[in-house]
Amino acid sequence: MRVARTTIRRKLTAAIMLTSTTAVVLTGAVLVAREAISLRQLLATELSTRAGVLAANCTASLAFRNPEDATQVLAALRADPGVIAAALYDDRGRLFATYPEGAAPPLVPSTPGKPGQRSDRGRLAVVQAVVEGTQPLGTLFLATDLSELYQRVRVHSLFVALAVMGSISVAFGLSTWLQRRIAEPVRYLADAARAVSEHKDYGVRAKMVSDDEIGVLAEAFNVMLAEGASPREPPSSKPQTASSKRSRIRSRTTCGRPSGPSTASARRCSRTAARPLGKPERVTSIGCVAPRGRWVS
Image (cartoon, rainbow, N blue to C red; front, side, top):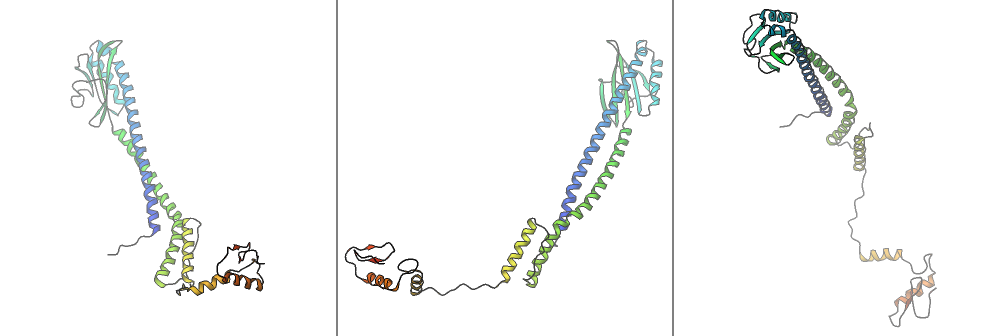
């Protein structure tokens, strides 16, 4: 089964788009998460500040055991639509006043719990101790809905998603334009290789449009085609005989001076070399063998 081929242009575009899309999406996710954490921290800080103000206003109600006055203080929370419940407890942990009036568990807890922040059932709650100087008078419970936080996060996510889609579109346009500088030289080289393999056309040459590694490859490809198209002389298979070797050596060597000795001197060298070995002989400075006491000029 033959697998369908994909072009290098498509691979380059896919690689660029995958890289840019991954980077942009991760950046957008980090921005959304950071915004959600920041908004939650801001909301918790605002709620803690509001709980501190209410606790200071409820000290007299708890000190004089006046639930009606405490209920009126908590009723001021109607101006803040984000607050969904509030409760005031005495020093023994018993429910003293609530907002809305008459609220009961699970809207408000039966016992205040430890001071601090906690989140449950999609709401953020703050437990604040009510003190007069150093004397504890009771505890304040204040809860706010997280729907405002979620709404802000959704709006921020929408803007980030639009930015991501715009960035992906721009990246696709840039990748389509930039990949041509890489894909076009490769396509020219592939067309030349296809013409050679299918049509046996060794006169075709790859077009060189760049001086990078692809250009070097195209140049080497053209050199290979030129060498393949030029005729070559077959190597000689005739063995060299001993006589041919001696003739070649005799033609390259001379007896006498390098500039060329005289004919008479050459004959004397030949006769001397043909004599049988007798007394010690010595070699002259120009390389001819001669009897003792005689020098060949």
